[in-house]
Image (tube, rainbow, N blue to C red; front, top):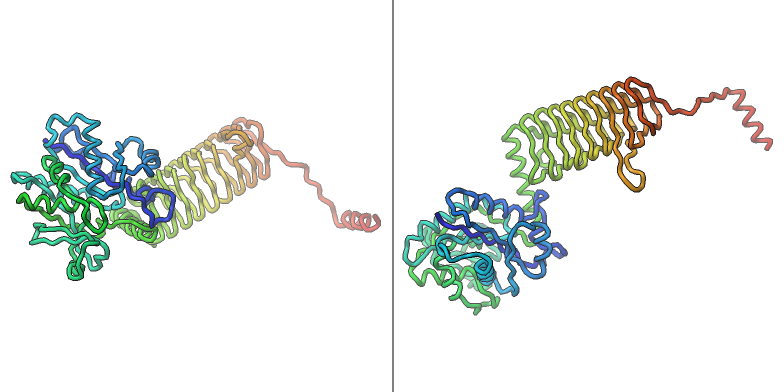
Length: 462
């Protein structure tokens, strides 16, 4: 069994983003780009074909180290102290890995896979094909190295690959291209799988005598071919190797990711009338036979059970929605919301950190925060759980089959028993027992026409 070391290069400053946040932490589907790459890496190292001492490491700069480590605290960090190119980044990572791990046993038995934190869409199938190509060519005495490439009608500033069939002869960085070479449409994605037995020798052999004054990882191809190695080329779809270097490219990547998510969900039986208007997060979990109307936004940690209907203009995050629930239109579900089966949330209702049990209805114009509402209870329009006293949050508990009349305020902490009825316009600050009617209204006073005239005359004389 071989070792698999995966180094994700994430030291770039991302100056074209023009933002303080490190480039690789910018989100796609509410997950940092780097998080998408880490998902790929984790899927690779957990395969049973590899040894137990596999490794995933992030190569970062001193400037972005703290921010990246704060977001991904469990992933080992390798610092590239000088921004001297991709070859230098891998060399720094290998040196740091050797310092912190026992590399004496089977140190050269394995593959180094180099990924990029700003290239979030490479599939596990593509990455595995690259690794397999490197492993298969490892039988050569001169070693193994496999490169990922792609064809494009707009090569722009990508490095070019010169190949004979699926064997690479050389890679030329964009800054080194001649006018004739710029016409080549086979481009380098930057991703490589490299035999551990030879990587140190090849890295030591590259120089920074080039237009950028950097150590190019692509120069390993020349170093390997000089030893007689044949370098296999794996071709990926252009979309898979999409890189993100600006906010405009980030928006394009988001659009691509959302479209893939929509297509996957519809293939699983999720109905969308206007899928281009529905936006998901990386962890959105929707069961089959769910209906999604136009203009919806799903933040992180949302799950929706079968038969639910989400109507237009809803904003949902951190919520679990039960079977056959009906949400919206114009509803907002905030984190730690749990809606059981057959719950109905209508227009302009906001729910936060609350559990609404089977059959609860809140049809319109209500705020339900820090509440537990029993089965089959009905919440009238304009109802508010007054959960915050200026210092702390408090809980409102409603039993089963409670009816809350319109325009009521429930001042927490308060408990309302089963089958209780709250009269419309009430302010409830004390617990209500089971089967009780609670009212807090000022006495109504009607003044007739004659009384109104007398009052008006008095005010005139005054």
